[in-house]
Length: 435
Image (cartoon, rainbow, N blue to C red):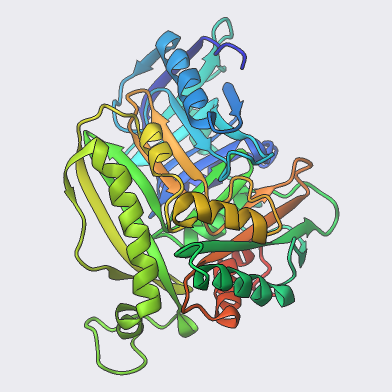
């Protein structure tokens, strides 16, 4: 790993209204676009001032060592001083230590942020480089005219065709029934390619995700793009928070939930909160997160029962865990301690990870790994890379991923249907769902 460069960063308060994504220039390399958005606010940036790629069991620790060196020598001017200002790194980490896909921590050259009505622009240069000409506020006058136009794409089967997926699930159930593992999360992929062989642009994908899935966290890091409903960990001001999702039901025709639970058979809350399969799957996931957070937190609050989270395509059982930090760990170190949760791997973790490697037939890459950002204080947000796609090195194709938790009561055909529902988010974002 090469030494971290010496950087200069300056953050200025600005007035930003409207869609942050429209500021992304169309000519930017899509692998250098970064984003973390929810309900229209968050962070959007581009360019690369510094980057490190790591592999193996040491991928998290090596990235943090690099970040410690980088922030220790950086010169930072920050007149805003909010989470996400000053020097900020975006990260995306491989699910498996054995993945051929590198984990990435990157510092964008330009970052536009907005939070609670306050907005800022951060510019970063390598020591010895001049600041870009003009005032940073000039960046805010840009508007990408092509952001609402998706690229022409075609879809093909991934490592395992849809017709073969129920057989994979059946083999997973057999391993559970045999007592080898309690729960295993199995995922499949599909491939999309640009119909004309051009580079796939990420700004239109992010725009469609952010508009339709505003309640999730829309992200982009090093060519990985998606909208995750699952916050692995947020660390801010000494408080840690994690959202666990496990247990899924398709949402029919986008019909919203009634204000209060009903006793009718059509209310998904009644099904989810009474389904032994979904409750067992959720309990495994909550237990894995609480056990990982316990060494770092006091006053750890673990809800007694989950609630139902409503998303455009599905309903999830959800639990929000919170605690007060005492270990001094950064948000990245907490993410490393939590990964992989039972929600994306299974229980016991080591056995489930081995079963995944034997049954899925693919390298997950950075799918289901931690994705997010942290600032110079170590605070930040890290989600789980779900409802996402990863650009190929040539940037002309992308793999989309979807999976589900398998327990003894799982039905193979229903699990295939669940992956199809979860693929809807990226298919919509890529303009495929409307064709």
